[in-house]
Length: 259
Image 1 (tube, rainbow, N blue to C red):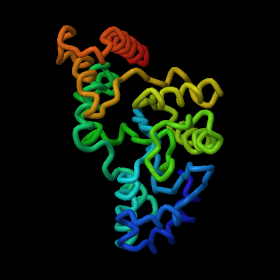
Image 2: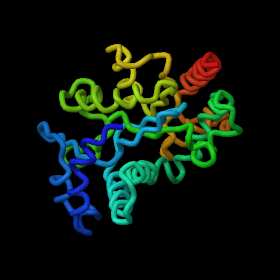
Image 3: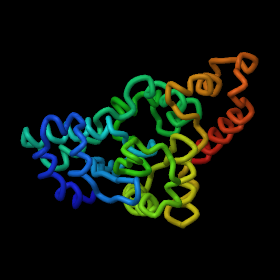
């Protein structure tokens, strides 16, 4: 785990006012790592890596809320005398896939057999007794803002020079640090980024398990069909059942092949 950025920004985080820890605009400037046009990358304490992780859940980038929650937790840990590693681990864990997204995610992982590959009853255990088996991360580890708003995949992270540099440095370091893990991208943009890295020889394509519907609550119908909770004839025209069926079958076969 590279702590260079942490050591650079820890004094800054200790000095943030209560207003800045609640999102006052000046915190963006104090934590800025790089800018290119209207794209800004800010530091957040997400560099903790679990080297024995078997499954890595990969989002696109931390949002503003996740960033602020992690900063508050890091500050709390440091104020109470925690070691650097303990503080970073706690900051990383704060709010990871909380709310409705977590049962959706664990249900999808179970549906393709990840729990059997891991030798556990359910992937729900990854957020409890089997937390040592999982790493949650983002393909762009540090928060990205475009025009002051959370990054949503535009501009393309594989084409924009600043975002491509973030992708091929920090995330590739994480890949190397977890040699026994498979990577589950959440969303097409994240899957595209992982396959870009595979094309560049920076990660093993066999370790990419793409195809799951995004576990967001806004994706409820696709998740329900993937999990067999909704019949094909009940689907709206917005859902492509054949694509979901193909993705589920492909993932189940790829997970079986892991063993």
